Length: 311
Image 1 (cartoon, rainbow, N blue to C red):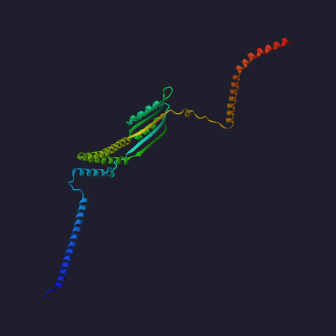
Image 2: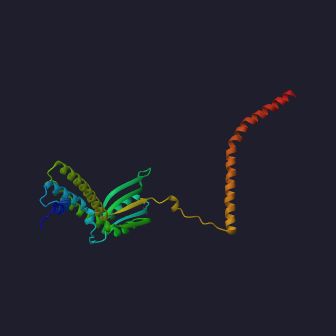
Image 3: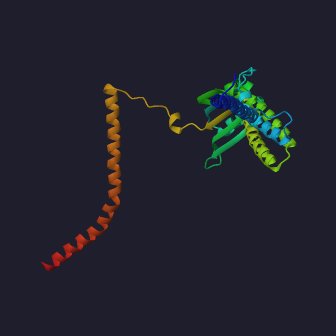
């Protein structure tokens, strides 16, 4: 079959169209592949960026991470663990007030009682009178807590007891809490000291030393508090006041009578008081009367003589 020029032209156009369609599909496939590859690359890059540091990171990075871990591990977290309370820890204080005619002797007896219970004198203050005698004394003693009650009882019997008070503050929970905090703080200080030994840069040294100073200051404060609590719970404080009794309290009260006897007694007292007042006035007037007599009598005589002479 012989093909005409028209038929050849149409076949050529169809072939060109088929080739163009095939090229377009191929180009589209390549473009999608390129976009997919680009997206995958971006995802991989993001995953790498978000991935944690490798174990073989530089020493500086590990030091910073360790410092952050040490700072994050607060001593309060470990101190929060409850420890068993070995026994009650109580701060005991007492006050004993006494009256004695001889304050000096009473003070000596007080010191004997304290020596008996192995106590120590913490403070002493005395007041003396015009003749040098001791009129009042204040003494503060520390005695072992186990003998606090017995010592107080003996002190109350030295002289006339006017008042006695005692109180106790239970600090068992605080003692345990401070002990737990000290243990945790010491561990924290040890970790930071280990980090300081491994520090390489100046920035790391400054940062770690700042943390170490802060933790050490907190540890020193806790140790001071522990020492105070140990002293207060092992030794009790007793305040002793001794003074002379008031003079008015030694005078017996006068009995008062009622009725006739009471009236007679009051009348007699009034008479005596009035008679005493009259005698007082007379005694006051006698000197003036004598003076008036010494001046008035001669004057009267002189006046009479002049009157007679004139007559």
